[in-house]
Length: 309
Image (cartoon, rainbow, N blue to C red; front, side, top):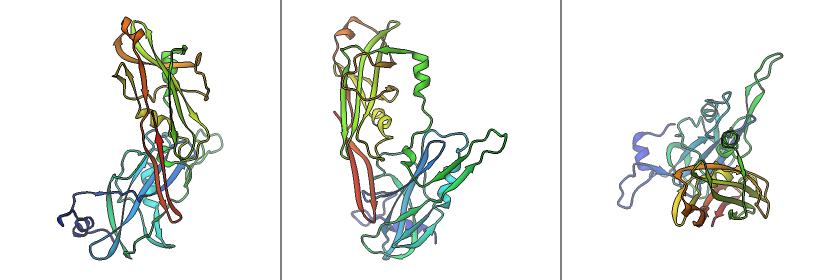
């Protein structure tokens, strides 16, 4: 049974009994991930909420990777409609197409969700289990050019690596060798492993460029392996306290090393003219500190944080 308008406003009550306009996902969110063999994937984030009539509602959102193969465009939405949810081993709803799509997130807590009433009395501690069926997206045919692409419930979903624009950036800009003056900064995941970035400001054609590389640090768990670029997207470079870049995800990925002197780096144009002061300025690379993974399962809760510099 779909959620009625009156029930939608009865789900979450404010401090004075007034209904809030949106249902925001809490920290007890449950995740389901699926991946395409061609790269990229989708994530469904959901949780159970009590209604004012003593019933249970399923609230959630879904997201897909920002970059997709042309063969999988539109497939994620179709697959979400095929998904189902079970509680305590009993299927309670199917077709999650009512969920709104959001941009891929590291942490889905706080995302504005949509809800559907379930034929299930409320009981504290229950956890939804989301099933996303395996799908055959395309199949290679004799003499044809179509690849064989399938989807299954595995991997890191919307954070699964897909199309990568960095090789194109490298070809267009060229590579430079980092000097001993390159600054190095790193952060660690609470689950183990981390990320290290090395960069310096270089004069190229009279303009100030940020040239650098980054590396994943072992040991990584499955949930953090694809997050390096997303962490860098939330990082920034400062020159004498002034922000130079607010997104370092375009830097080149290399193998981890203790000394990045001589590492082949690509460069990002700051759009500013080079001045003699740039040679004396202090460069600071700031990595964020935040929750990068949160999931609630019948076996318990898992939270992974990244501690930057």
